[in-house]
Image (tube, rainbow, N blue to C red; front, side):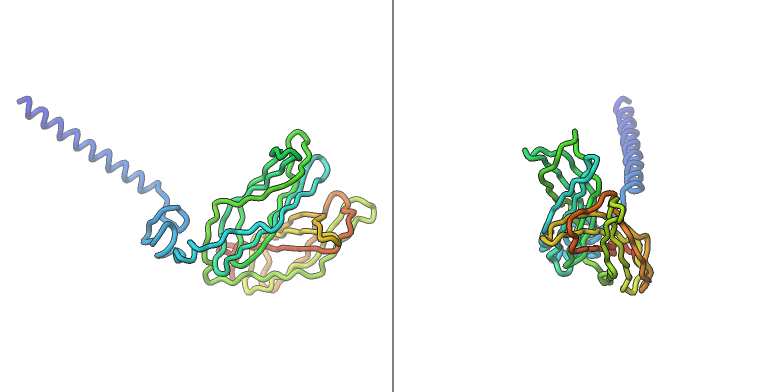
Length: 263
């Protein structure tokens, strides 16, 4: 009799375990994200982690060269605020980074970190670009002596079926306010591509006769239709007293995201 009771108990336990396991599996399947080419797992018939099969070829991705930081600059403004810019280069001809994290680190003369600013960006194949942050505040009013720029979590990808967007910049002009309050740059952006473009980020870098950076700023446009041109003007609250000899305007569109372009 006791053996039968124990057997029944065992059967009940096994049934409950099966039921709970089934429920847990269903919950996991419902809540777990769909496989993708950036989930850090080898799935969906991939030949490696996030490459091969439906993703980019493994050989191309695995041979990607690191992004190159060509220049980093900081400029101190009023009210203990500082503008920073980095110029980076992608040495890879056929693959770009659809996503990466970056960090600007400001240090004082002793090498102590006094401020950091983080963000994320992208870079197209065989391209170079500026990344800028405006108005970083240092702790306790500390004065920076240097700035560092680092990149992490780079997600390489082929830019499939999409050409690099072409945006021309015309009529660039720098002026100081006649009243001595502020400076401005104006010009015209023209979309030379066959695509309508959305979310255009623009970085502006001013250089003097010695090629030293004397001004950093950013602006953006929500959209520019194919072959359309738009004027832009961006201002600085204080006058830039250096002799500005070069105006660099860098329009950037993340075409890895198909929502940012359409015919």
